[in-house]
Image (cartoon, rainbow, N blue to C red; front, side, top):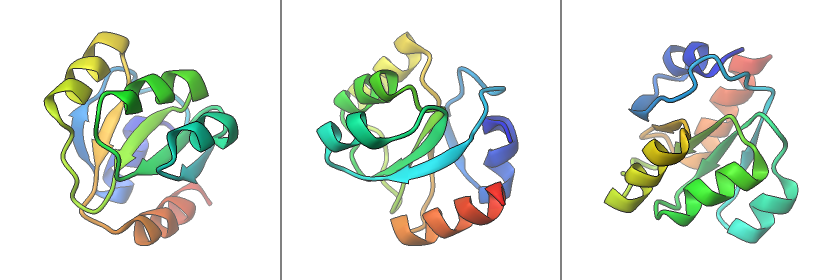
Length: 109
């Protein structure tokens, strides 16, 4: 599945879509940035409530396919700017993190 295909299947909001054809191979939910760097898999969709510019840097280091902000969190201006500068796919959902993870799992099954 690609990020572009994931968007309608999870009813995601697009904040920035730089690489719509990037594959989504799995998912990871976490908010401790150092933990995400060391544990999120390449090409996974990262679910988080963190919304500052450091999230874009972590997404690049972990090589995730996209960031999905959960719980209705909106990206701050610096995160949106960095996502645009670094070509990071940035999406959102009003679902809580658990529900978003369940929906992601179903979409990838």
